[in-house]
Image (cartoon, rainbow, N blue to C red; front, side):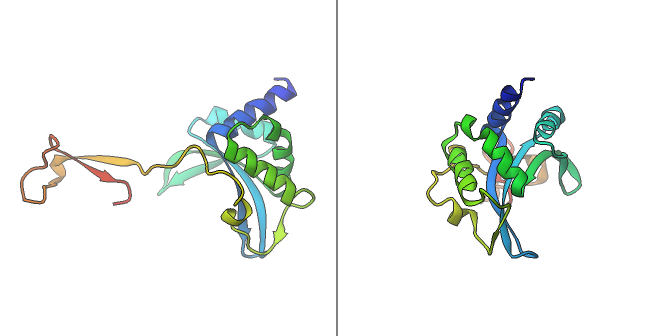
Length: 163
């Protein structure tokens, strides 16, 4: 891949599946920039990691493999955001990248705790909002309606995730 094409591809991946934020390290009492990409496709994360010059790491939930992350922090995140910033199209992520380049231009961290809401207060909200997942459970689990009769939804009950 040509170098510009690679950075454009990575920017598209960040636009769709990435997180650009700041993270507080209590042990150092400092806040640093962080950029993450999450995918359930290992080949995509491997290519992103190759371009970013980082190692992939696994995301597990209670021991179950959920996917992989490519992550850059501190000065490495700043350097990557400097390369992909011109290609970002999602307004919130573009604003966050430019803010990180302004705040962390010469350093990988700043002293003290600075939450993302504070650092990115001038940025628009993300265009993709996270909606809680819906879990569908079979009637065989013994779910009943409020009046003690089987649930009217053909034997299933829709329960918001986390319930």
